[in-house]
Structure formats: C-alpha cells, structure tokens
Length: 461
Image 1 (spheres, helix red, strand yellow):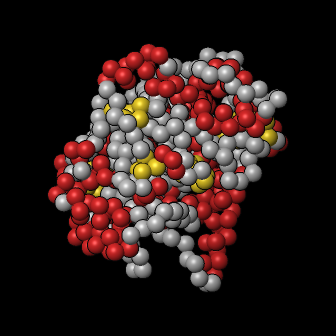
Image 2 (cartoon, one colour; image 1 turned 120 degrees about the vertical axis):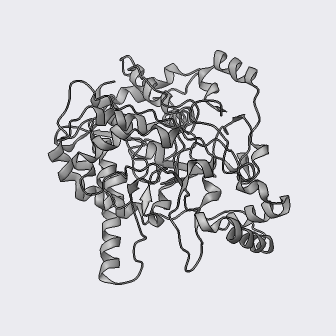
Image 3 (cartoon, helix red, strand yellow; image 1 turned 135 degrees about the vertical axis):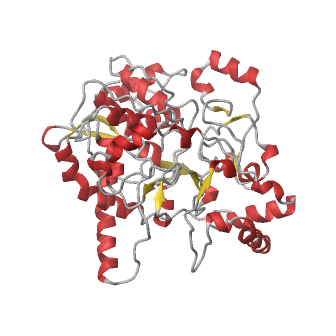
C-alpha cells in the first residue's frame, strides 16, 4: 500500500478524537473563547480539505459502471446517480456545503488551495444518519469501506492496492487502527519517512465507530482508554501519509479547534414516545446496575471513566490485545506522543458514556449486537445477522432499540458471498476475527420486566 494512499484512507478513521470536558455555555470570556474555537473547528472539519486528491473527479462518475445493478446516468440524472452512489457505498447527504458530494468525500486540495479531484475525510466513518437525517459525529453504520476505496481506485483506471489485513467485512465496520499502524511504521522516531516499515507486530480487528459526542465526558479515549483525551496530536497521526513534521506542527492549532468543535456536539433526542412511568422504573434499575461504570445523567450527572479488565467485561479481546507494546513504544518516542503518551499498561475496555445510545446501534465496540435488548440478554444475540438496507426508521426497532435484523444461516452467508460480494457485506458473522458477540452479560441478571424498563430509560439519554 502506498504511504500517501494509506494516509488518505485512514483519514476516514480519526477514530476517537480527544476531548475531556464540555465547553462552557455561559457568557464568560472562556465560554466565548470556547464557542469561537468550536466554530473555527467546525469550519476546519466540514469545509476545509487537508489532503491532496486521491482520485480524479471522473472516478465518481465512472464508479457506477462497477456496480451489480445498472446505475442512473450521472449526466442525464445527476440527482438519481448521487442517491444511488450514496446507497451503494453507505454514505449520507452532507448537512453542510460539499459540492454535491456525500459526507466523507470532498474535493482534494490542489495547487494554491484549489479544489480538484476527490479525497476522503473524517465523515466517511464519523458522519452517519438515522431516520433520514445526517449528523456529523454519528458513526456511519452503513459504510462499505472496502467498496469505496477499491472501486473508486478501479474507476480511476488504477489497480486497487493489496492489503494484508481486513479493512471491513461488513457494512459499518472499519479498520482505521491497522491503517494508522501502517502509517506509523513508515516513520522514524523523528517522523522522517522510512523506505521499509518497522515490524511493530500490530494485529487490530475491524470495529464499530463510536459517536463523537461522547468525547466531551471522557478523560481517556479510544476503546482501550489508554490515550489521554486532551491529546490533539493523536488525531494528527492520520495525516502521516502526506504531511511532514513541520506541516503537522503548523496544523496543530487547527486540530485544537477541531477538538473544541467535537466537544460541543450533542446527540439527537429520541424521536418516538417514551413511557415516562416505565422510564422512571428503568432509571432505578440503571442506577443500581449500570451507573457505577457508565455514569449518571441529567443535572449533576457524572462519568467515572472506568476501564474494565478483560476478564470482567468478557467481550472480544482482539482490539485490546492487538495493540502491541512495540507500537506503543514507537508512538511514544515521536512528536505525536511527546505531551500525552499512550499508557503502557493494558487493562481492557473503557465503559463508554451512554448519551444518545438509542442512535448508536449496533452495540459493543465491534458492532456485533444489533439491539439493546440483545445486549442485555446475551442468550438472544444472533451469531449471523443482517444489517439494515438504510437508516430509515422503517428499519428501526423501537421496542428493542436498535436495528431490525434477520438471523442468517452459515449456508446462506456462504451462498450470498458467492453470488454477490456486495450483498454479502450486509451480513455480519460474529465468528470472524475480532467480531465475537460474547461478554457484557450483566443484563442477564435482570428479569424481562426490569430489562424493558431499563431500555425505556436508556431512550431518554
């Protein structure tokens, strides 16, 4: 994989951008400064290109020739083609000016700052939708990452580069962590480029994309909680495919503003009726059984920022174990880790905040559980299941909270993969590396009535 291509591809990830506390909302000078920084960060993140074009503009129009089904003509029916393009790749309309492109794609940065060609940005993974509305900071549960990267490259008249790891085996997952590791392996400790990669021994799996609005409550970030959430530089590692150390240093203030924008984000509110009496009972269940790890909500709510040992949480350990000591040591030896180094101690997984949990299905760090009910009753979790064809509310389960699904047999999965690799990526197989649906069995202790009460309360967060 070319170093620059790897850098562009991993800009998708920006996974786990860092913040600690919410911006002040009052009229104090600090509050005004935070709001000004957040606005600069919004412009930088949504309206500014940081990278050179990876594909020509023609690749967008040619991509439809590679699809299983005939595509609308991009010249005669540009709106129809744009909608088909979004559906095919699992992308969403941009809720900001973006030259008619979906979230996640933008015009690249050409000579003199001109817009030219196509490039990826953070919203490919961190720009999602629910109920037909797009949100910056909502994980993209529809994304077909492999198809985006490979088909745009082929449509541009080039051969897609081989990869030594799984980018994504189903809709909604991505392996930005492994791409980031590949980028770092091609830099020395002074961030000068290397011809041959360092053998860092990393083996990270594909994962679900967490929502950015959680970041305002966290003191440490990423799924393993080993990185200080005040770090701005950790997000900048995803520019290593293209930027020099001096360029990274020049961009650090911009990424500090981006951080301010991320910590200003709020989740959407649950849009359906809530049984308030049932939710009140569920709050009591939550405070007895969940709050010590996931925090409390409403006025005076607190978040404990707990990292739960692997043998306690019991979820798939591949993400925690796959981050090698060599990678951590190399990262910490560079400018990226100079102020906020990664903790060298491996514990397990950080119990996340639950703000907006209703909108963030599927659940667990790897997206292996389709609904809250299945999360809270481990015996009901499907081993193989379908991802929804869109994020329209027609596919949303308001009772169990999450995405409606159909269980799939091993035979059907294999047959679908043989018939249509595109359709096969709408299927999740929890037997794949890093995608186990086991663990987090704490809800098994609840009665069904307590479980449903708890789910009703979680709708309110």
